[in-house]
Length: 380
Ligand code: ACO
Image (cartoon, rainbow, N blue to C red; front, side, top):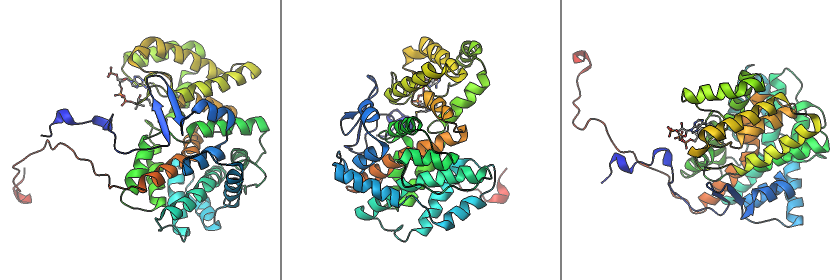
């Protein structure tokens, strides 16, 4: 019999499908894609390679990767009609709102949008992986009242994004650092936005609908929006000396600290360690930024006070400082998350729909059982 004791609140621990893409061991802080540790992907690979590996479920050969890279480049430009819509968006909207609308609109312009065969889903995925970058950069430029910058074909995916965003060609080091951030965010198992994409796909809906839903799920502050919320927190703290008292006060009031805690990781999120190492590298070279010093104190205070509850920094804790060092405004941190996670969303939808079953969970009914319809005029 179903009763409230059987409810898996937040679907915690519920296994609804099989996947060969990503493995996470939250107690030991392990994350692998295709069995390969995230640290190795970050060190040796690129966003392009990981995206293809996730789509195909295997490491590509050099020829396959070169063909994929060429296909991504060939698809970087978006239709002018979409750029016109982006340019006409009201000023001051959140870029995640803009991205959600742009993805949905892109679907209107794609003659293949309604096709749901695996080949069609894959072809659309490659276009979306390529074009998220152009869309997000165009939104930034349009919102800032600047000319939209056309993509360049001689730059990497990461380098071209930074170029389109700022209008300036990044250094090799900046492009590589950003590439690593994309690699770290490309996939993460059955997180809320991937699950949302799959739930939409399970109805046999089209790719653009799946990804539009996923963008909406990623937008919230408990998921992708946390990296922006971390920067808001750092701005609120102001100086490193105030960090400990600020965090202690929040914890005393039972308020959540952004960028820490995770449904799966009960120890350090391995992605946060890679990002911390890079943030440290920058700090050692250029001196510790105020943000970095505040984060150090927050990390220590959080681990001391609630580490025993399994609350440790997650990937969003350090990503903001890395982006901020690259000159990216905080409103763009969550869109950048989407820029990376698009690969995981697409690969997961393709994998799930190979053996599709409609997702349709249930709720324990706790409402009235013998309600009577009272005519409107007789109600109190
Ligand atoms: N700060 C302080 N305490 C926390 C935090 C936090 N960030 N996260 C969890 N806790 C505490 C809760 O208060 C609760 O304590 P209690 O048992 O004494 O009541 C306990 O830890 C369990 O918390 P839940 O919220 O039930 O854990 P859940 O698994 O639902 O939460 C979540 C996961 C939503 C990520 C949560 O840790 C959180 O809100 N973190 C802040 C937002 C954030 O950084 N999100 C990004 C996640 S990573 C990503 O999406 C890429």
